[in-house]
Length: 417
Image 1 (tube, one colour):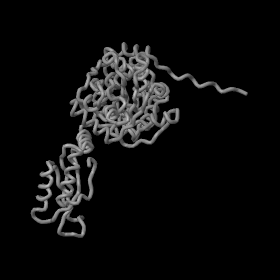
Image 2: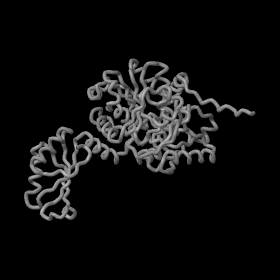
Image 3: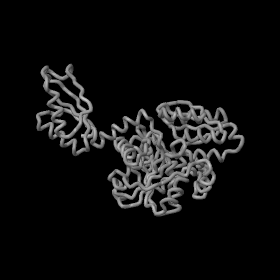
Image 4: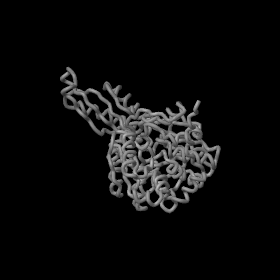
């Protein structure tokens, strides 16, 4: 009987590869700070440091892997150019470093990619193609272009050169926080996770590596359960940079043995984390960049209290048109915006009585919307939706109690109550 040939060995990435990448990209990629955060430490009960890789020129850690991969191209490949699929940050990194190195760049982005990332890629000189409703659609187009035009494809997370580049972040983290107990890593395709875990565990075997992914894109959790990369359905998520339906075939086996825990976070937690970082750290992050804080605020990581924890704040490219909505969602999740529905008498003084009750509870009215047409059969009363500004969830509860005592029936409430 003829035996089938064994599968080819998977590419390995070692600490030596990561150190070589760090030396290779040093002149082109910023060495970002990792300061301690007193307000986040007070908030979480941990001793928190924030690795601010959102301070890279293009606002994301993706520059590290992009630069390393492009530096390793030979002269003919550089002349032909590169192509990649990306939801945004990998595309930005390639566009910027392609411009610096004189390498033509084509990026294929899903149609849901944030407008700020699309516009910036074009401004940096990349040829941008919008294709499909998922990363997989964009990836398929990038593969087709690479084969047709002879371009070098640089995968955003499933390329050993990229993984080694991303792992350079861990070298810097452990230079700045050598006694760190844990690093929390935002995870989509697992390229950053693999690189950081390889470097961190090699330098400090006892350090804990915590991966965090959105519940809307839980590919790592599903793949760990299956023991291999598996495709999962995607739902819209604020953490668009982590919206990957299947972890990498290269990155997953590198990362899986080194991950100590995986935490999933929902959209409310992500919005609240964006709000907390904006208020407490004066730092604007995108949803994917806020994921580590969202995980640390989860009770699932309560055992890290008192420990030295590094949050990888990896991206700051949030669309400004989205930021306002995210902050409002965060305020609602925090109990600082509350909307309720009630009925008032449709006569002079009806609304005044309601607003007086709200004022007596110490809340501020932001919006009142009347509905006479669809308010029901009682033509002498009107339905009103009221949005109020409150201090916290306890204040919401106190306001609700006050309204009930004053005779207002609350028919419906939204998040924050």
